[in-house]
Image (tube, rainbow, N blue to C red; front, side, top):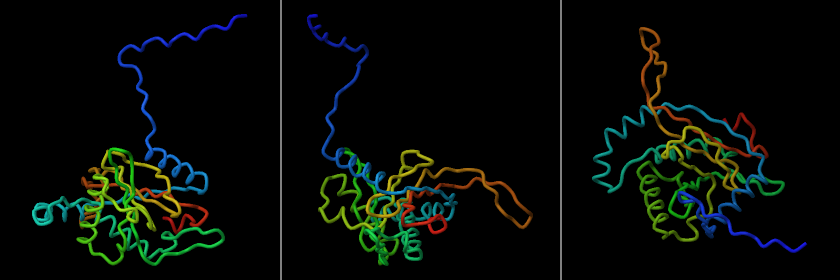
Length: 230
């Protein structure tokens, strides 16, 4: 029978679809994320955190801080400092699998995921274990600003020992991030929202609104167990 000539697809009504080529950055992200899921035994847990003390400190200091430093004081420097201290106390979470060995790092190079117009990039703030809160805030702002302007140096996206991502800034409340290989864990900061919590007082328990969030961590069960990760 004669071959049937292919018919053109009917024109879509109301805008239809748009064909967008996959960018070089998107291809790299896809390959890196897929490879991480294939190689790691990913597990996940979350803890709930009362951010009241940090929120009050930010509220008291944010105007003076911005006037002095030229950028806003976010929650990320506080989280980065806390996570840095936790990694120094629990160095197995700050490690790397190398075949039959685990390289345990007793220093912290913190990867901070930054969203920009082409996708996602993870610049590394090196030596956060040697920095105070102000130094961390300045470092994160500098890296994020230059990442979005595409002015990072190649060595500024390598050498991380742990990664923090922040989907909470876009309203996410729970997430299961993919581990940034060859690290063994990644933590994300979720949206900080006021929720009713039980407050202990001299007169007994009561309810109050507090700024609460979840810290979610994906971790590699090949290197860590649940007790250490928690």
